[in-house]
Amino acid sequence: MISVKEKKNYLSQHVQAIKPSGIRRFFDLASSMEDVISLGVGEPDFVTPWTFIEASYHSLERGYTAYTANAGLLELRQEISKYMRRRFQVTYSPEEEMVVTVGASQAIDIALRAIVNPGEEVIVVEPSFVSYAPTITLAGGVPVPIHTQPDQEFKLQPEQIEAAITAKTKALLLCSPNNPTGTVLSKQELVRIAEMVEKHDLLVISDEIYGELTYDEPYTSFPSIASMQKRTILISGFSKAFAMTGWRLGFACGPKEIIAAMLKIHQYTMMCAPTMAQYAALEALSNGAKDVMKMKESYRQRRSLVTRSLNEMGLACHLPGGSFYVFPCVKETGLTSEEFAEQLLLKEKVAVVPGNVFGESGEGYIRCSYASSIPKLEEAMRRIQRFVQSLQS
Amino acid sequence: MIFTKFIGFYLWFVIIFSIFYKKRVMNVDAKQRELLQLIEKNGRLDISTISNLMNITQEETSQMLKKLEKENIILGYSAIINWAKDADEAAVTAMIDVKVTPKRGVGFDKVAERIYRFPEVKAVYLMSGVYDLSVSIEGKTMAEVAQFVSEKLSTIDSVISTTTHFVLKKYKHDGLVFSDQEEDKRMMVTP
Image (cartoon, rainbow over all chains, first blue to last red; front, side, top):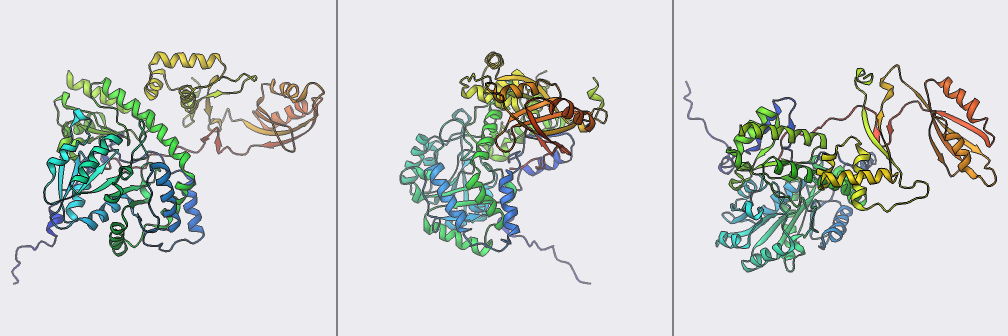
């Protein structure tokens, strides 16, 4: 008889240290139910505009099915360069300062891996996109959360950066417009953050995936702030504004030494972004402005609809400047984020995401996406109102 | 209601609006245009929804609607119906290219008027190119349309010739696709 020793654990420790995403549980629960209206979706309700899809078909018909250059099709990088200059007043060389990636997510991953040494700290502005902290951990770094405050519309305060700085701080991860709060930092606010970045010699990873989707003020891209371009890795992509989530296409722009380092990781681990998606993106940049404008106009209207309805029923929220999320407060109901979201789902079949999955400062809030049709949004608002009223009685 | 007996037809309320009406052009401001675009897509949006979407009061919304109706920019509200789903009411549509000789001092407008006053005529356009008027006609049967063309349309003095094209299948009309609606293919909850 062979004696079996205690079962060996083959998994790496740093992967085991990462908590599974809090969104997963809601996904499983919501998916098991019928007739659910979901405001829990982090992507556009629009299908990719036909002209992008058609351009991708055409590339396949012509047999463009091979790898592209590691950094992405040069034509595409040239278009990205023009687009970034035109829309965001930042200038990047298509040859040296840009890499096309598999979604903005991969861009964030290789950016972090390119700059973080084991044990170095990266400041994350919470509530934040769920992937930031785990991606920092996987890169060997330590995520350091800053908790932004609801009475400041979840805007990062420069003093908070100062307080979070240690000898090990390497970078600040910014996301404006923010997922999940929809908060947009103004030029003035960014200038004050830039002073802090300069003072403490930090790098900035600026996730501007929602940069195209701002509704009130003109958008300020972080590297457009004086002397910030050399410290910034700008992350963006096609998922949100161009309604191309499933295509998995993003990009990073930055100083050429950093981009070269990111490209090294990219070429060994990914080779290149999907070719057919790159052709769709090329069309999106060449001829997609009208489609983007139309979708944006529709988001702007729905933002108003949802923000008004939620405030009217007593779930207070500020009018978010960008993205397609509102982040109402549910503390008045006496429930935690999770309790609220779970009971709302079970009783009224509306799926939202509890704020605490975006970091502890999201506790007491829920994320509602308004990327849904108007009739669905109105029905969801009726159901949420009924639920809130049932809690009061 | 007779309509509700038939399952699966699409009821879309639209608005027909014309910026150019009898050469009277009004300056439509950005807010008015936004409202027109909203109700053009869905004429059944109620006042409260429109005001929420546009971030204005209900009072402002109804005032604006009233003004646009009065100015004949909003001409009416109707539904887009897929009659092909109603076997008893199914209609045939024909598009007819009409060549005319405009009369001195009258021009195309008078000829067009003689044509568009028939209730069978759904649309009349003055065209550039090889023919002059494009006339769209709806009837119960092909025979009914044919009869109208031969007895009414082609006998008008100024009409030189007609070429009739029957519609075999409607794929898209006024920006709306006639096939069954696509469902939301997104996952329930994503980050």
